[in-house]
Length: 375
Image 1 (cartoon, rainbow, N blue to C red):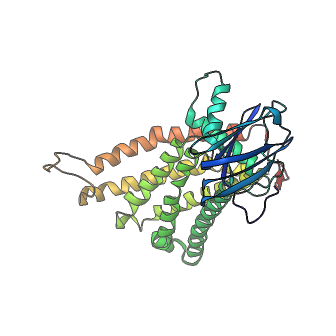
Image 2 (image 1 turned 120 degrees about the vertical axis):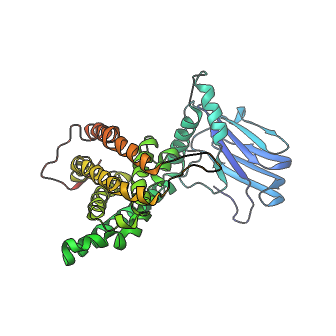
Image 3 (image 1 turned 135 degrees about the vertical axis):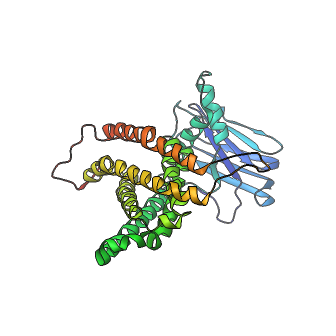
């Protein structure tokens, strides 16, 4: 990219099909633009209204591959200058320019890219949002993935690391208290680590958004139900009833939740770095077999123990008469929730995890070598 450091560059948006490159120069009221196409490059200069107001703007791009300069053209519009560049060979380029480092003023025209890809699909029915997300991820990987990690990857590392540290902290504090005081530490569990557990559990709602924004694969429905189920127990059944906070069952449910997470988040971290730690993979998809039923049992005990408390205090119960003419029984809801949790809820979660385990551990055995291996 041979440009003077003190020159101004317009914003340039690019898209491609198999036979053509389109450059959209974001320059309003361009005055007699100068465009020179060469065998493997293009030079542009013009006055107009760009990112820095009315000025002279210019740029030069050295392309990834050769172009047919004789069949290249450009069009001047009121709000942009559009360059149509013909490729010599009909194939998709992995990037626009010859060097992996991309200038900050060169960006991807996703709208045009999507439209042209749709044209190639012969009017095949498509889920536009899903295809747009997939195309966005693919192009970002190809365009920006040469010299630095993507922002998404960095965020996922920090999120999983933060959650691992949070649940590990909870386990360590509970373990030290139990080592020092034995079973006498159990009534102090919520007082000691309740705030940390609430923070980690609320943070898990980000895992509902991750598949929506394409950060992880899969559906957001299962994470939503799992996170919401725990938070219902934590914030409604425990936080709102002080008498429940000192029960030993809180100690057990916190231990179960934390053990699951201190295995799950390191597994996700290893996946981010494309590392396969066989023991960790086996633990991730096996430890739930005893822990999930135990956790559901503890959650059921918490609801059962809370029934007389909520019946006594009428917390969250809306009684008639009222101006909305609406009735809601919290204890009735708890009984229904308990039935859904114990019967269909347990079956749904366990069957889902069993299918995932069969898929993940298919053909894998945990042998004597449990060191991490690169895929």
